[in-house]
Figure: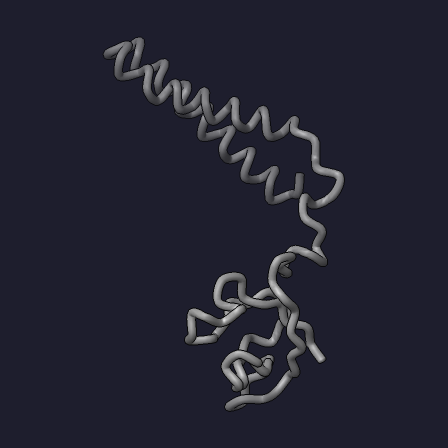
Length: 131
């Protein structure tokens, strides 16, 4: 766990303990039924913190980082970095539309900018590789 995770878990543990004690106080002082709800919420928070604190960290990310931004079913098109109105964009030539489409500057999977539903890119989009 990172330091931030430990901080959040500690804060949640404190909140869970406060709710548990408050629920017990309300149950003893006024009504068992009213005290049961905050006590159950507090107990649930404490159990969630206990389980997550003892959970083993994964060895590797579930999806390889290199493949996370690419679709395995979409084709890959070659794009080039260009400046458009002072912003860096990726320009890709679309064989279907016979025109350029512009996307953000990072390579990876994109939704097609084709306006024709008959485009081969309409359903799955395409992956952009920088030239």
